[in-house]
Image: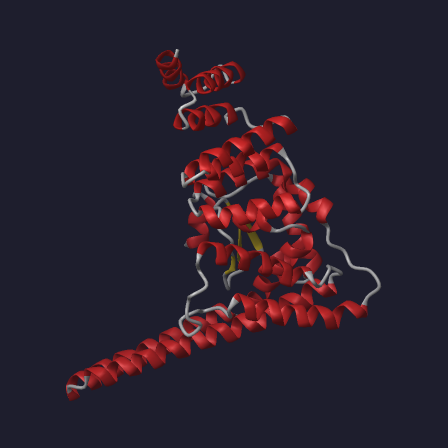
Length: 339
């Protein structure tokens, strides 16, 4: 039922070339099971992928925009395929079903005896068992996903690299305090250490490996601007800044990235963010070919900074490069007020 709703949800990227590219990676990882897997590229800015026991795979665009190359995406896809091949979802459902029965038994027994605290301990232990079981499945999927991508010839160290990048975002967002007892996944630091160790042992077994960076960037280029826009609109400003700055360090010194960094500063609105936003917008203009809405954003920031003349000029440029703007009347009212 979920897969049926997903098909008609309007939230799936239907581009045939991008879908064919991702399927090509899946088939390279496992040619035998590839025909049974149905891939859905889900348009949502969060880092995630999932695999249902009926062969329905979801790959979220927040993952795709973060992956630096084909090897990193291949590792995550191999991880999800491991869940499918090992029937982890079905096993987890049976565990939850059986544990739910245990929880119901303890609730009745402790209520009859009038021992509420013991009941709470029993429930805590049962929930801990569920999460520990899930973590073990994740560790197994990590191992199989790594082996699968390495067997396909992908650079082994990229498996830990994508988790290292995600850890930096988690730290910036302040998400490092979650207790491992209640986490259904191993901690990010544990994953990084394990995968790095596996990469060191595996790297010597092959003369050459592939990252597939150029191929990956070419395949995702038509969609990156919209994915970056969705990332900014997500509202997790500190984590998104870490992500965008990482793109700059990786050589993507593009007007597009600088524009969206400016958008993050503008939307966050903390001390000195207006100046930082202006700096990023100016860098984007210097590089050339930024999104046309840069002039509108620059006008808003200048207005906040009390620079009426500069704001008016930016708004006028915005209407000049974007004459059919849907917000034309609003921008014109700003211009008339500033003149």
